[in-house]
Amino acid sequence: MRVCVCTVVHHPEDARILHRQIRALLDAGHEITYIAPFRACNVTPWPDVAPVDVPRATGRNRLTALRAARKALARHAQYADLVLLHDPELLLAVPRGIKAKVVWDVHEDTAAALSAKGWVPRPLLPLARPFVRLLESRAERRHRLLLAEEGYRPRFRGEHPVVPNTTYVADVPPDPPGDRRVVYVGHLSAARGALDMIEVARIVSRNGIEVELIGAADADIRPMLRDAQREGILRWYGFVPNDRALRIAEGAMAGLALLHDEPNYRHSMPTKIIEYMAHGIPVITTPNPPAADIVDPAGSGVIVPFADPAAAAQAILRLHDDAALRTDLAKRGYETARARFHWPVQAERFVTQLESWAGLHSEAHVQS
Image 1 (tube, rainbow, N blue to C red):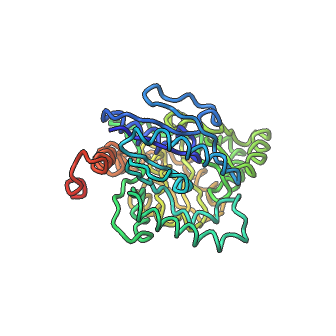
Image 2 (image 1 turned 90 degrees about the horizontal axis):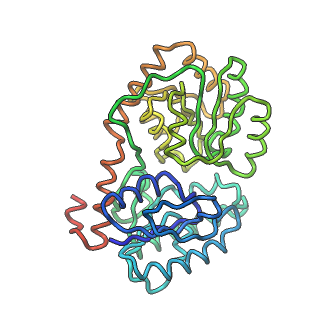
Image 3 (image 1 turned 120 degrees about the horizontal axis):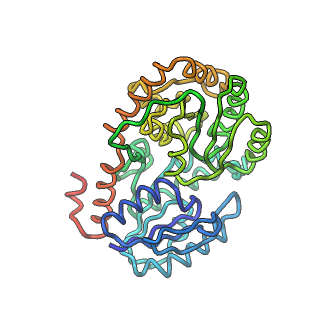
């Protein structure tokens, strides 16, 4: 199977796109053309894929990237059995008359997420949301949809397969967590709790605890992160590929997931929580339902109120002082991650589903 994978928004080393989906397709013996902003992100493509460089869509500067993506798709999709799109914007860039099957991998509740995107003018939000819903309805009529969350089903009329955004979980349990470091892995924005984490770092640094933030940041957040780093209250790595980021995180006494109470987060599974659990890191999270539904039954962490840095800092200090507690939370988290969220289980379903859409298997077999 020849698959053309395209993104202009995500980093080319995005965990779901590259480390999970593309890796699963390569492991299954399929050929990949990867259209992504390699140069814009200073990324060297994997040697196993055929790379096509395009500009990156950032903020309100999106038109150039979409035009380049449309041109690249028109050229490379003609050789593909299937085109896998990872940005809703790319639904507007699909060339007419394309023969390959087009699949949209639905990562988020696009309309709900608009309120968390600072580049969208606030007065346009009431108009943008209906337009997004219209675009989704059009995509459902014309293309195949692959959902990353069960919670996305109500947005669509038809039934679409769900491949959750899980992670790799090692066969051997990790070492017990330490007592000096707290980590965050993921994109940094106000809605994802970046300002709260700066304040948390300010509090716990008085006790000699290091806070490490690993991920790219929105433009309005970067100056505050740099200032905090200059003060010596935290360490900000910037973007690090997912596999390396998680290696850095190993051994931390807590992993932060301080998402705000935003519509998009109320039914989106926070993958970073599963990643922390898979690496034996106790979780400190806000009470968004998908996060609480994982952490509370698993007994893998502490749930703190929204936008409450003092409560998050207190949870960190509690873990710092109680080695037995953090070891128990880490053990429970790992066991749950291994039992429920090991990516290779989902990878097989993902590859089989795409093969079915490309005509390599019967769809009835895939959906059973």
